[in-house]
Length: 168
Image (cartoon, rainbow, N blue to C red; front, side):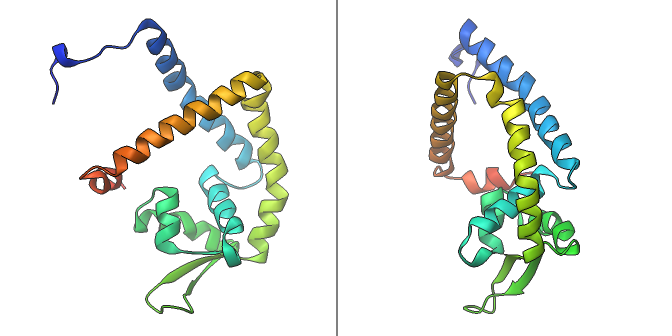
């Protein structure tokens, strides 16, 4: 653990950027959640439907889906429960390996996603992209790609899996 004298304190510009992010992130997520609630989904539900819709055969191994969503196995089970109850996702054994469970997008789930996608895209546009010019959009993509690369590099460090699963 570093001491106060070892810390590279944030510059004024870095502090403005950090505060803008931290003070806006939760509000943005809440706005996107509210808009999806109008069509009966959560942001997490929507993300599951998107990942499954993009997967080969509209199916993913449960372990792979949990990793993509950054959830523990029990967290994924809870996330899928409502989608399964609604008939949008099914769980089934893998044809290739009986030990493996698959999450599969149903026709109902595909229909829900197709119905909700325009609503969600309009929400994302209204809350994010309508406030940015082209250069800011490019900067945003570059910024979050760089942060993702840094986080990915951190995940290769010893103990990363333990840190990732804390609180799951």
